[in-house]
Length: 256
Ligand SMILES: [Ca+2]
Ligand SMILES: [Ca+2]
Ligand SMILES: [Ca+2]
Picture 1: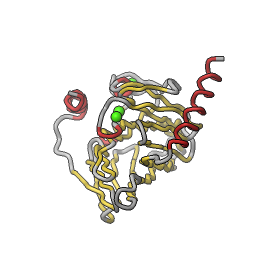
Picture 2: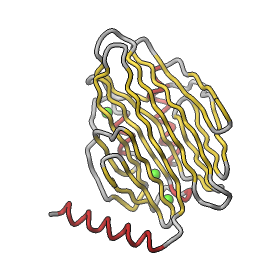
Picture 3: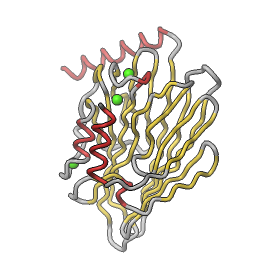
Picture 4: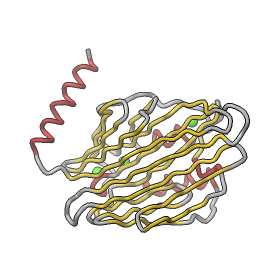
């Protein structure tokens, strides 16, 4: 049901163009993506923890749109574990390079590095807003996931012993954590929005989160953002207990 809702939303947005698929493999990990919604599977030791990871953008107060709607998709697979995907129109060129690093078999750990580049192709300053959207479904189930803002550049989602940590350089300007499909609806409702800077800690449930960068890109200038995503099955209960205490302290601070 979840996949049908998401697909209907995408079809209404971009039509039914044929997507070009790609697959990254390394060590114990496999990632599937395409040139429409970017990443949609991330297997670590055979367990798919990802429903979707995509980028959206907004120029000025125009509505947000998927970066794939910029047009001219180009998928350049550089190696078995590295792909560059670009989109462009007369104003903007967006490209992202994904690098998958897998762990040893049964380690429960793998990592995706991403470098995003946004180029202003015009001779005018560009009021550009980049949105990174993450829908992890940890342990291959949509439900049961919790999430929290750890610091100004990191959001973590977890379920039982499995964690997904996403960190960025530079730090994001705004963020949001909410139940599927609320953030997706915000990014596709035809109205200009900012992320809400809420809610942390969050869950459990079908968690999704997003990050937002606001930039005025100088004429013919570039904005570069790098991001790291790591899946880990935490082995020691002591680590989780410490994390739980930290989140409880955070919740107490927020209520004061
Ligand atoms: Ca989810
Ligand atoms: Ca789950
Ligand atoms: Ca919107």
